[in-house]
Length: 117
Image (cartoon, rainbow, N blue to C red; front, side, top):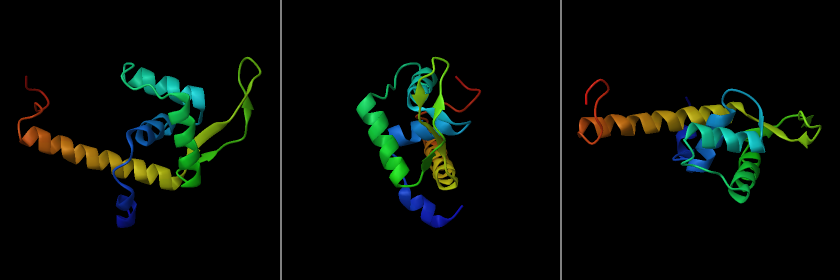
């Protein structure tokens, strides 16, 4: 991974949550919102201003791209988004950064090591 990717770290939580939601495929805004809420057990809820403002910034930064507009099951036209190669690289760099912090927390007995209580 290029070292200059790490200059974009740390990511804002909303950006990383959106990246994780898009990691396994294209989604529209409401689909992203629902996945984030589901994955976090409702702890994180992206309001419309945060969600769509963040999506616009991510588009401008070329972390995501808009896919062809599609109709949903009710016939509504929705904009779908996907991660770009740069976005995927930055998401991986953020995951590695967070993983290293978790390792420090375990080494300092702040977080239990897996398999121990």
